[in-house]
Each structure stands twice: as structure tokens, then as C-alpha cells.
Image (cartoon, rainbow, N blue to C red; front, side):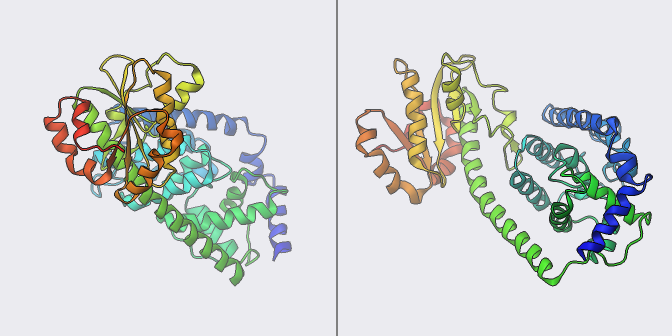
Length: 415
């Protein structure tokens, strides 16, 4: 089988009219497209944040991105069709539904900023769970230009070529089918990358040429039963890991949102950790209530970077004065959260902030043990803690009747 597949690849590379030779290699326009599309995706994200994205594909920043992609021709002909607004079907439902629009923008932002494969897979699974009508794996054509070594493009011809080559039955419109196809593409590309490229555009071009019948194949690449079982096992394992992580993240995000909401309602400027700005709880995006940037506090660069990672910080309105700081500890080390709050205290010992740890009810005893450690106790720094259940229960009441940060102390505890 390996020899037969190698022969197909050799034919693909030697054909001067193949996608490999006419688009993939020695093509400055292809390389320029990556920069243009990346800038365009950033514009889509900012437009959605600013609520200026509009309710139609036409003349939107997304149209610019897809135009840049379809200008690549060949592999990407028709890539924009999936994003056209179809009024009779109300799809794709990212134009009229504000929550779906925000979710799409956050998906793009998280993928734009991602540096690891696991982050991208997690975002895809999360997006798939939202079941946004008409928003399927055609989005992978955008992801390819953000992460060409991780995400292959996806269209009818590529799917047909994949099915012909590997004897599979992958269907259009399903993210799960796309992820399965992607695993096989990665495995085979890794075997033959010496003759192709780490950039998955080369292998995708091969599938495209097979799918359009430019290259005729038999069953050269059909997967063995062992290979199929391996792929299925890997997909199930990754899905289980992502779901477990999502449950943890959702709870952490909920607590952060309650804290941001309370601080905002009490009249403070609020900001989340620098790596959490794009988060959203039940359609409420952090970026819509947080400061756009972390204030320029009077500390050195490294200290500021550390403080900016604290889960939630409240500032006195219009100033750089920190009044309260909160660390949410779902499953991570409570001690590390204590240390971050302690670092903040020592940065401003003459004007200390009120410090809080937010913890699951079941971790109260563990927290009390940590706060009672001699190394912590000798610092004589007062750290309050709030249980998840209490914060959730009293959030709305504090937003309505609270007057200042002191109100939070009524639901907090100390050791």
C-alpha cells in the first residue's frame, strides 16, 4: 500500500499542471494571502466586538477574508458559498443571532491566538456543540490560513478525493467527520512529508486533484482495520479530554463573570486576566464590560505581567488604583493563587488591595490548611475567600444593593 501511495504522490508532483506545481510551490501570491487573510480575520473579530459586523455577508469584513481565500482559485473555488446569507433558510446563523455572532467572533479570536493543536481542537468541539445552523467545517478554509501545518482545508472535491484514496465515507457538513479526516491526513502526511510538506496545503492539493479526477486512483491508500481503530480511539480520547476541560473552564469562567459583573455594577473599572479577555459566559462577553487594556500601574514590566494574570481585578474608576483582586481556583493549585495575591500585596504595601480567593465548596478545608501554613501566616496578609455557591447565589443581590467592595465581605470568610 505504501509503495502504491508513493507512486500517486510522485505522479502528483511530476504533473506540471497539478495543484502542487501551479499553486503550492513557487507562488508568491499564495504566501501573500496568508498575511492578508490573517489581518482580515483580525478585522472580523474587532467588528464583532464593536457590534459593527452587520447582518449580512455582503460588504462585511468576512466577505473580504473569503474573497482573499477564493482568489487562490483551484483548491478554494467556492469557499465563500457556505458563508453567503441564505434568507429562506436563515443560514449561516451568524448574522441575525447576536449570541451566535459573538460565539463565532470568539471562536475566531481564540483560533487566531492559539499556538497549540489542542487549543484549536478544543475550539472546534466547542463551536460544534453550539449547533449554529449552517456553520460547518467550511470554516476550516479560514483555519488553514491561520494554522497551515495543523488544519487542512475542506470542500467537496477534497472530501471526494479523500474518500477515493482511502476508501472512506466522510460526509460534508459535519465537524466530527472533518476531525476524523484530519487525523488520517496528518498521519499520512507525516509518513510522506519528505516528499510533500509540513504545510497541509500540499497534501490537500493531492486530494483535490484526485477528487476532481485529474489524478485517477484505485484503493492505494485504504486504511487497514488496525489504522481505523487507532484513529477512532484517538478521536474518542481527545473528545473526552476536551469535554472534561470544558466543564472545568465553564465553571471557572462563570465565577470570573460574576466577579466582573459585580465590580462593574459597584462602579469600579474591571479587568480579567490578560489571557481570558475573549471569554464569554452565557452570551456575555468579558470584553464588553472589561477595560480594553490593563492600566499602566507603577511597577516593573515583569511584575505587571504577573499581576495581569490574576483572574479578576477591580480598579477605582478612571484610575490605576487596584482596590480588589480575585483568584478563582477550580482545580489548580490553591497555593499558586495565594502567591499571586501575595505578590500583588507586596507591590503596593503602603496601599494594599482587598484580596479574595474564590473556591469550590468542596475545597474549603484544603484552602484553610494552605492559609494556615507558617510561610503564609507569618506574612500577616489578610486573604478572604468566597465559596462558589455563595458567589453564585448572591451575585445579583450584590449588583442591585451593594455599595462598595465591603459588601463582598458579607459573603466571604477568613481563616
